[in-house]
Length: 275
Length: 275
Image 1 (tube, one colour):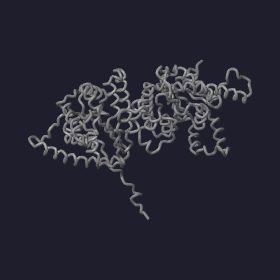
Image 2 (cartoon, chains in turn red, brown):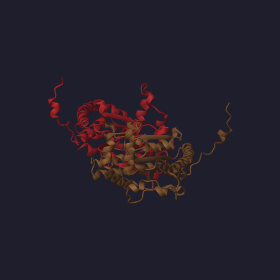
Image 3 (spheres, one colour):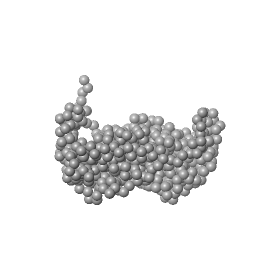
Image 4 (cartoon, chains in turn cyan, green):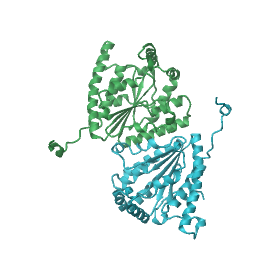
């Protein structure tokens, strides 16, 4: 089954902790965990090489645009995914944008204002590490916006994404699904590891207390904004190597679907002699 | 009659040269032209002072946003309007953006991409000297886009403007309506005046040859995108002084409608002694 089909968010999605665990690879049953991880890394490497080739063709054609949206709870692996999958990609055609809590200037504008400048141009892949979806998650859980305003934002997002899709953007929205217990382990690891402690933010614990509210806000946002031209994918992310492998498969599947190739050669240019 | 009502684009708008002439002020009948112009300048000055006061209240409240879109044929007076009306406004709360032929990077994106960063934040007035409407005018007249794509862009504009309106933006769209003969005079004046010749562009004559096509494209764009939350106003612009007066009246009328005031004072701050 294609990754696009397998990972696509189902209507009426319910985010359960059980689904965050890695689905073992079919041929990995019974193998030791470390061996499975090594195997998954090897498969992912091979896929990222193929993704890099497709990205070159995308860039050479300068027609299509690819937008990868990464969302997920704290420690769900957004940074890790970017590092693992995109270190081989030509930075000229790659734009990574990170969206934190809005600044005063950003908050003074509609919530899409800070997003729009970062959408991909023709030939580009853009990665959003967090995105416009933050604005239907954090303020909703904190009750800074009511249900009516939240639904209006879903509609604004839907309009915006449809416009992007109709102007040549292939949108891939990924929810990195970790379990509450996996987050506990990862936060504890940040606290315990002197080299990781800088990543820890007191606010992470505040948000963690609202875990169920966030899962609910995610479910609803995903349900309200999933569309064939802007699909959501739910990736089990308790295992990092498995998560990377699944997203690599998904991205390659999407890019193969674009039927990319290098442009035809120009006879005049082919005949040109540099003097 | 309020300026908003008087100047509002009518359904089934037809742009006729006759309507580009200045409607004489009621009490100006029979007065010499220069005297009328002087009177109009004086009235406009008084209005811009009032607009400046409303802008201060807008800025102090940091709630509403005002977007003034200026569109019109070459020489229709977009630059002149900005100079005449906004030289008194606090630059901190004023953003003027000019949109020329798209760069390669801009053309590689959806047509709203280069627009969005310039929309007003809370408390701001933004002026668009040309705008996203260029993308349903130039490419349509030059047949770079077909009717279907043009209608899709109208819909994208409508979605975008509705979103801006729903997030607190008061949109005022002004078409500066000049006659073909007035443009001839103004272009000739540019050619004849050594200090103005730099403004002349050969492309102006190319566009002038498509006058009727542009009028048609404007009519259709205005008809397709006029809405109560994003209204179009058609301002007779053959007379510069009359044009400025009409737009000043319109803008003041709009801002008075916002019921702006300065924020309540804070008792703690009022009692504070600076040491």
